[in-house]
Length: 455
Image 1 (cartoon, one colour):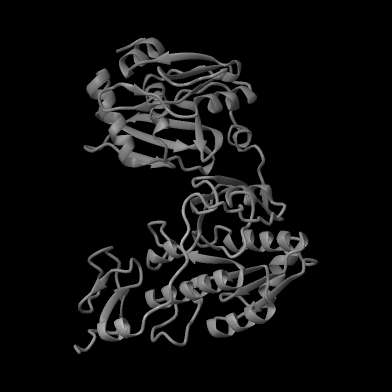
Image 2 (image 1 turned 60 degrees about the vertical axis):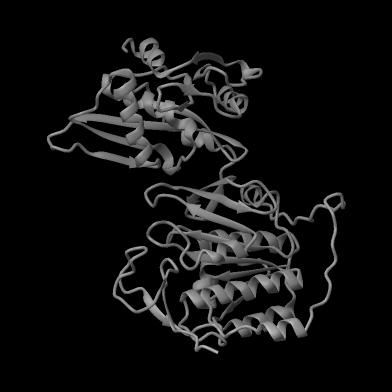
């Protein structure tokens, strides 16, 4: 049998290389490639055929299954992102930038679950128990019955969890865990993969809910192999800008509930406070109508969210004007500028363009295209739009406006916050529209002509 070949794996992206080099060709990171021992060879064909496995039970799609029970924490925003509460025997991965508040969020969640009657164990591989207690005292959680441990040896952690049999185990973080059966340094691809597999298997076998904290790379992805995200049941990202007090907990994968659901928190001196109505908070600082400011009626999962899109257009002294974006896709901004020039005859050549989503929220849905175009045109023409209106719609490369989903829920949220008018694509299902007067648009030239008197 051929001898297994030693592999060199990038700790940033998980790419495999035949030899060591200073820079990973897949992700471009420096000094991230490490040698790892090969996995042992599996059983041969003869051995596999001789030792037959047991027959597994089968069922069809008509089999009735009771929905999994859920344990709520009392933090409505946290439970909302989980799909209604924590499911037993589930594995959840929480990622976010350093210092964004992941440990604070999970410590508050652990205390809430403990106060609701759950047995919770919080294992920190980055801090001593005294540091965790100091944070708990600062957050007013010192009286919570959360059991603490500071350990990185996964064998000892699993032995303790087997003996204690908690309802919820929080591991902070998966990159610090060390498994003695894997010949690699803590934080390496092999260690992270093996540790996540052991913890997920333990959760399924013992019926314990496990939450893992994961560090992210500079690109915003959870560090380590992508297979970790496939192993777990739920993947949550904790987002936010350090300069803003808002924090967004976003579900990007959930086997027990809707994905792309968000929970909104506000960072205060006493920890993270829930925001029951994020639209009102994102729009709380709006003053008089200003050029370049447009309110977009968006959807985050099943929740309608209203947010202000701000644009600034100024003459550029550079041969290549600036295009700066915060909270939106820069490539999509370039597309909107190209469509405005090609289909509406409005050029932004020689002009710097700045686009910002107020409040630190990040928008990814195409329904924001029309609101972005309106903000850019408002800033370019130095004309303020009506303060009591919202805008949404997807813009195609041909200049046509495409209808978007859940238009009725968007308008009802707008009516709840006092907006009386809306601009939307023709063909949307508005329903009762919540009393909002809708101005329907078929294409971009008509929108530019009717709203800005050009085209």
